[in-house]
Image (cartoon, rainbow, N blue to C red; front, side):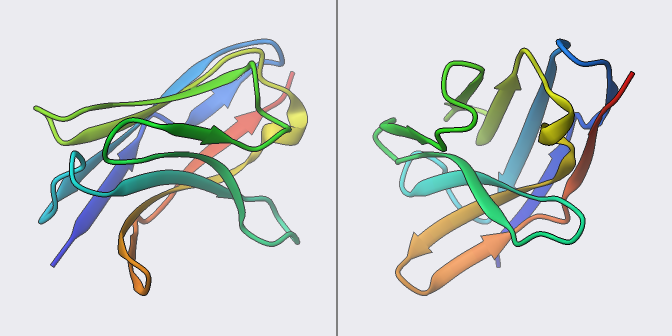
Length: 116
C-alpha cells in the first residue's frame, strides 16, 4: 500500500513563493514517476509537473520558469518549489505516484491560495 502525504500549502501574496513536499511510504520515488497536479474550484484536475525515476522533468506551460519539481531519493520525498505565484495558481495541489500504467496513487491534497 502506497501512502502520500503532502504539506507546505498556505496563503501567499501574488509574487510570493511556497514549497510543497510529498513524502511517500510504501514505494521508492527513485523507481517510478511522481507528479504534482492541481484542481481549482469548478475546474478539472490538471498536471503541474512530473519527474521520472531517473529525474527527467516535465512542466505544464502555465508554470514553466516559475515552478521546479525535484526529489530527495534518500528521504523518499518529492518537492514543488513555486515562485512568482499568481492568483490563478490558487488550487488544491495533489501529489501522485505512478507505479505503472494503471497503478496510481494520490495524496489528500494541500490548499494553495494566492491572494492579496
